[in-house]
Image 1 (cartoon, rainbow over the protein chains, first blue to last red):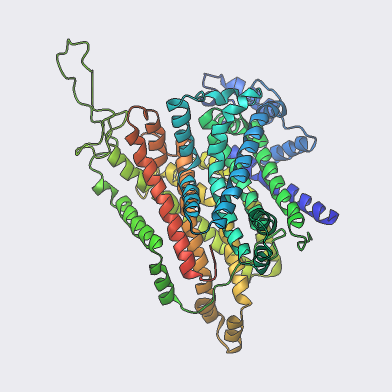
Image 2: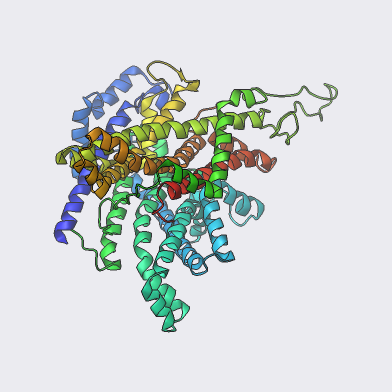
Length: 315
Length: 322
């Protein structure tokens, strides 16, 4: 187990190195520098640009800049932001990570708490109106992109019903009361994942329900709860947990778009602005942050397997 | 079924049947046939978009002021936000452009996104998968490690970076195949992030089919490697690859729409379904039908690829279950 964990973590570090290298290379290939007149949107004397490039070592060969960046990173230093008066990237990101994190947790909660019960319900009433209804809901949710759904939700709940403010997302994460503003973004973000999870849950449950031990459980006279939840769902969990890894990753990347629509001041909005302003420190910081979260999620999924199915051993 | 870390075992389709039986199975699935027909129709509309579009998608149909010039209450110009009419089938937008023509052209962009992404992701993924499955062990583990790394990348971030880094021209040309080079490069960027799934699938299929008894029988009967590859390995890999490509299409279409929507994809005045959705949402309270058309087309594209993919999977691989 310890060896397995050590190998996985080593591999995670290697992947992050590759992600850092690719991102570093790409971002320096983007035309225009962080101090150019076109980027900062006002006239800048050439001497000033030169001085700033020299100060931050931006004229050095890319490999040398990369090694320097990784050296700082190894000491936990993500550098400073070019577009925000030289504030440390770490401070800026910690500020933005809170709303993103809360939004992610709420969306993931919606995926699991919505998708699994819907799938179980559909499987237990196979071929009935409930089953068809659940399948229709799942297909419809997955048939429109998250950002279209986001607009639909805004239209219905903010404009027509007036339940939430349109741009309440801007203050999201500041206080406990502001969490309400996260409901619409979380639903829009989680809906496609919720649809997938409910489909997988239904299919996995149908497989398990054909097993002999389910017939045994039924013939013993066990109730609905015992048969479906204790016997069937527990054994149907493995494919569900497997899909949660990719679903979580899609929540992470989907949040870039959803944050932009609802004006949530999170990591995603930060990344989009940083590409436009060529803010190298922020681009690297946000990309690595996303990479770490995705890989930790995948690791967590693999670590949960033996808990669900004792026959699985991690090697 | 060992799923602890690593690639899920790929199911091998039984060889029996061949094309004829698969076709018969496919025809029996009504949703898949309907989806295929609708998709073909949409593709034809996209291909012949310039002929089908009733107007120039960028032309503004403003009508001159009505009433006296001195009448301050008369609207200065009209022709914007029109409801669907026989002249403008889907109405007009905030710049008095014909929405039907823009939707038809936008459909062309979305389908091109899917096609390019599938070609790019497919050629990279299939090449890597074939080399990994047939090459020496070190090559296999190297390629699969690279695939794992590619799989772990946050794709949308990479597409945005690639899109920014690739620039606006392709080999100096600003327009290729009647598409702007920047749009084309967006599709390439989408494809460049989608290949790992295909690489894993192809490698898994090839490794599995190599171990089957009929493959072994062909070898012991003295069949040439080329014959085995063409007669046995290719048919067993082609089915799942086609299915995966079908599922790849909606992902590429959504990525294009989402990026165009946040202003990082197709640029104004170009039309794509994402651009249209973004434009039309601004005046949805005034004319909701304007938004319904591009969203409806997008949803139709997605549903059809989904049902077609499901139908193809059931037809090509009868042992795979939903």
